[in-house]
Amino acid sequence: MSQIKKLAGQTAIYGLSSIIGRLLNYLLVPFYTRIFEPAAYGVVSEFYAYVTFLIVLYTYGMETAYFHFSSKKENNLSVYSNSLSTLTFTSVLLSSILILFSQAIANGLGYTDHPEYIIWFALILAFDAITALPFAKLRQENRAKRFAFIKLINISSNIGLNLFFLALLPQITNNNSLSVLYNPAIGVGYVFISNLISSLVTLLFFANDFRLVKFNIDKELVKKMLVYAFPLLIAGFAGMINETLDRAILKYLVTDKSTALHQLGIYSACYKLSIIMTLFVQTYRYAAEPFFFSQQSKKNNKALYATIMNYFVFVCSLIFLGVMLFMNIAKYFIGEKFHEGLQVVPILLFANLFLGVYLNLSMWYKLSGKTKYGAWFSILGAIITIILNFIMIPIMGYMGAAWATFICYGAIMVVSYLYGQKHYPIPYNITVCISIILASVVLWQVSSYILISFNTGMMMSVLIKLITLSIFTMLSWTLLKPSSTVELVDEQ
Image (cartoon, rainbow, N blue to C red; front, side, top):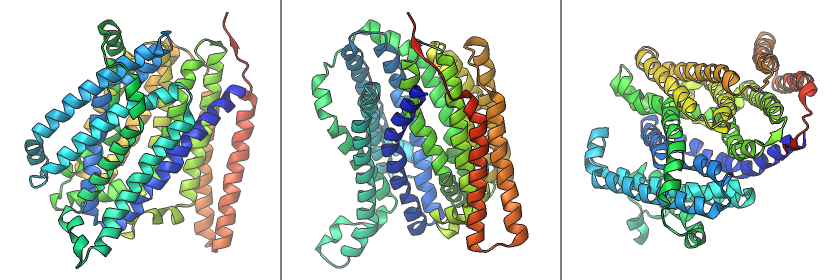
């Protein structure tokens, strides 16, 4: 239990930067959805969908390779120097190519008048990829507070710059000498400029780290790291297809092209309502990956992994139930003109729950060094995503995209579990996990039926919802309690 508490503590600290920080960052969503039309917000969503693909290519699994080799090599600085040197070189090379062909790329994407978007994002990608290794080093050294501080600076500066460019400048530059600072024609471009500046600020925070590193290449070590990381690159890239392909291609697949960006904006905004689930999964992953590697040499470590899965499923199910019970409040996170897409929220919440379970399950192939399976699972998910999006989006619009995400994550979750039990068996309590998930769905439906049937007032409605959450928590805790104690000792 002490090890579970340690993981929870690390997750809480990372959550300061990822949950609290990104909650602040996500507060830009209600801001954007009130100052931009759905089509304009669709432009923002489309470009950030491309970024999620490219950042995987830029980092190519080097973070996990760094964790793996630094845990096996006495000279951690050598592993770090080689990783950072390699990543810096490839980032500069890739961004130079994007900048060189920026006009041609803009033409291909339908943004002929805005090649600057490509240049800005080329720089953002380079800065973010280069800082990925220093952030990984902080995680590996358990310097969660330093990690959280820099992440919060990045997020705070991005929020501040967005408010400055999109809210303050339009008010103070009218008919005065400051008008040269603001150009209304840039519009959503100020979102990208804010990101660029905040990414540069983050890079500057690691200036001292770069001075301590010898930028040289140990060819033998780098070759081993790349061999280890390559399947993770494939897995990561395929994973991004699963996660964001729908937003990247939706405008090309919808039947009515005149509403393409409008639908993309609606879908992307409603996707953000699964924010709490997404943020929990992301912050848990930050803490869990180095934690699982640190427990690899312990006896009973597999029992610990199984127990952690139970608690993870409980928290995710609690998040699902809470969001759905209080949807009447949560929906105001986005502007009213985006509310037509709220029916995708429960589908996407469950899709992200499946993704979180899959991330837990994925540790078996990372711990055992069989990273090729991660690539195969993600490729399977990518194939499912591509096929279902091309079939379902023309028929159902963004609802088809939501169901494709749900089916994809559910499929790779099941396949990863089956293969994991064969190659690296972990005694997961499937009965407990499924019971907790089903309890959240049943209690949501029962509560909704009561609220609709009896037309309760606001106070009674809140009371019923709180009672529902309490019943779910007590029921889940009863299921979790028998597996709450795991004793770990070092293997001799």
